[in-house]
Amino acid sequence: MAIMTQKKDDHFKGLVVTWLLGLTFLFPWNSILTIGDYYYALFPDYHPSRVFTLLYQLLSLIATLIFTWYEANVSTRLRVLFGYGPYAILLLLFIIVSTALLPRHSHKLIDVSTSGHGGIGPYVGVCVLVAGIGIADGVAQGAIVGDLSFMDPTYIQAYSAGLAMSGLVTSGMRFITKAAFRDSQSGLRKGALTFFAIATFVEVAGFVLYAFVFPKLNTIKGYRISAKNQGARTVKDDLDAAGLEADRDGEPGKPPTRLTVRQLGVRIWDYLIGQIILYMVSLSIFPGFLYEDTGTHDLGSWYALVLVAIYNGGDFAGRYVPLWRGLSDRVVPSRVALLTLSAARVAFVPFFYVTAKRGDAGWMMALCALLGLTGGWLSVLGFMRAPRGFSGPEQNAIGNLMILALIFGLTLGVLSGWLWLIGKGW
Image (cartoon, rainbow, N blue to C red; front, side, top):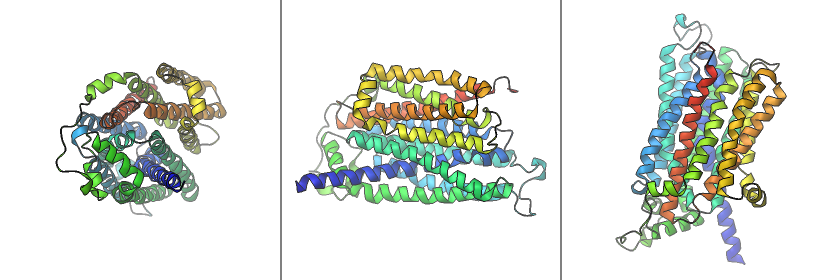
């Protein structure tokens, strides 16, 4: 009984730390998305929400593609730490740039020809920082998910829920800073600086958690030893960090035969297509459409922030639905059902279009909640089911493949989001 209790305690600790890793990893990017009104005040003519998201996703996609192909030969630990480290440095640079963008008191720190806005030079500088964050994401996220994919499925669910929680927390923070600092230029700048300072602290905390806490958890060590015994080379540095060098008996023999990345992609093609569709639909609407195409309402500049918060809340709730096995197994009993429901979310596009033209704010809020809820639920369900029945090294590769599909879907969604601008001067 004592042994079983200890195992449950270790499992719970592992889930908590994994959840926190999800929260810290995506917190900076969600911060940038959530303060979209700050960038629209600076760069009103350059569609910052759409451009930043496109840059981020394209660079993330390229990095993810490279590391997915070579995942078996690259240390998971190095990939993840490379993600967290540059993330924090780039956030510090965001603070420096943001300090100089908007005027303080009577001192104009920007060219008067920009009429109080950021201008093309600062805009390009911010775009470069966003691109750097996209690269860091692409290097690290597949590594984290690949690592979690050969563990109990509840770990990937906890990590995914942490990712969604970062969106929910940043939305709540944005309400507080907007109320505290108002909509003046000075207030927007102070709110943005507050966001970046907190995000930098959170990212450093994530680095410490992954580097020094996560590898030493008993359950995590057990899963990684098991993966190593099945031929995984990606866990070597993490086992070293846990002080388990002695557990390796000399030079490892020839690793067991495993399917290649291409062969695994063929085996799980429907899961990959499902992720692509899910995120293509979501990102064609969120966040660009919510900021630019929902019209004006009684909530004024708060309206887009409310919609973003509702979407994030629905996404967070949806990522816990897979733990309700009875419901998920009844509604989504098979791979065919999962792919069908994922494809059915395409209907959200005309629904949002009609609601923006003819519906009121209540209908738009309901649609945002459903968009987040269904996306979070079906996506996590796919991540939990796809690695079943494969060896540890293959599961690591599948985790990388699923992230590649997710980011490819995000990129297609961002590109599709530009179609909303047809007839508006484009």
